[in-house]
Every structure is written in structure tokens, then in C-alpha cells.
Image 1 (cartoon, rainbow, N blue to C red):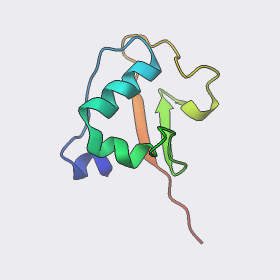
Image 2 (image 1 turned 45 degrees about the vertical axis):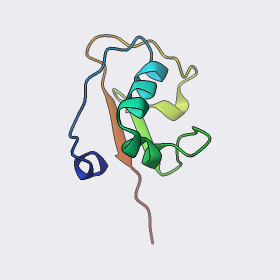
Image 3 (image 1 turned 180 degrees about the horizontal axis):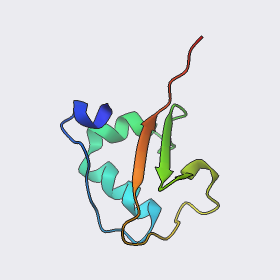
Image 4 (image 1 turned 180 degrees about the vertical axis):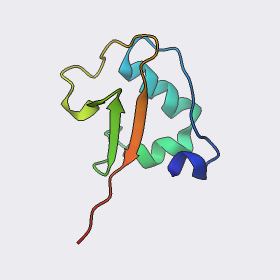
Length: 81
């Protein structure tokens, strides 16, 4: 897994919104960020981010408010034939 490849299994941040949490992740772990986001800052297509059980691609607001205990999961999409 990517996080384990760079020595990180999980991290915890205090953030008010999903966007703030992602910004914290990007700034504290730039090696991971390059695999999750392209040079323009857009989420890469083969990476899935889930806020609890919701795919973040379908959220109406990227600045979705967070509550204590919310969990952001990063999943590498795998496809093939």
C-alpha cells in the first residue's frame, strides 16, 4: 500500500472540512500527495477517497464539514482484463 511504502499507516489531523484535511495531508506528506493528485491539484482518476463510507467524488461540496471521528480512506483503484 502507498502509505506503508512511505512509512505511514495512518495519520490524524484536526480539520474543520474535508478540503482542509486533504490540504494538511498534502503539506505534511508531499510524497503521498504526488500519487494522489496531479500537478494541477486534481485528484488522480485511479485514486479513490472515501469520507467514512461516501465516495468523495460524489459530494456536492469539497469543503464538506467534518465531525470528530470522521475517517478519510485512500483506496488505489485496480482494473484490468
